[in-house]
Image 1 (tube, rainbow, N blue to C red):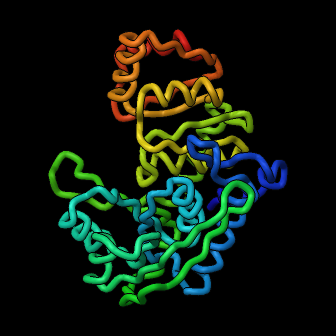
Image 2: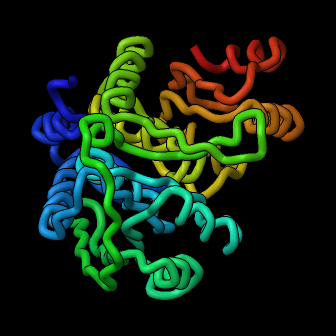
Length: 300
């Protein structure tokens, strides 16, 4: 059993540099470490006041990736996060709400597909309201609709489950894949040691925050005192400008994106001026030797 929480490391970093940017957008506004601690406390207090149990499942829906990445931390520590793609069709989203037994929808929307499905399935709806910017970012919550509570066994295995996702594996039938808090925590610690993550790191989030890779890496970055930059989708020129301007030290993405970026750089003649990149992580499939060699030329 782990002895410390991921949030403990983030709190420690906040004590060291409370005003340092923690999670920001491409406009460099967002949340500093004091904001992260404040939003964490506000979320934890609200979930506790609602008596949300450690086995209850929460899906977060907000277009604000900065807010999502911060709210996900208290959710995985005190309940179970169910990351879902908001762009799924109505039919598919309704299926996964039921299949994954979602209890609460945490959202900044008062209407739309997510709200309609939550009401149809008698789920509890928590409205998020956030205001302010760097240094005074705040969140408030309102139980907008109280749903029908589901009963689940509260055994020790359930208590350690932090998030639930799905995979189809080799078939078209979705399967539930629970991830324990211990597994997330231990993987994070191994990555920190292997890649020497530190407070000088600046990480760019390319994928949307509902993809577990994204918010896992944001938590890792915050645990080591670095800064995470949340983008609004991937655009070649904007991404290169971001690396050059912010002296980004690492990012991770799929081989498809890396292939596309390499082709853009060669065709446009765009130069990556900054040599701040320490490494690039590729996930999902192996890189070709040609692409691997290409990126080794401007990262070290």
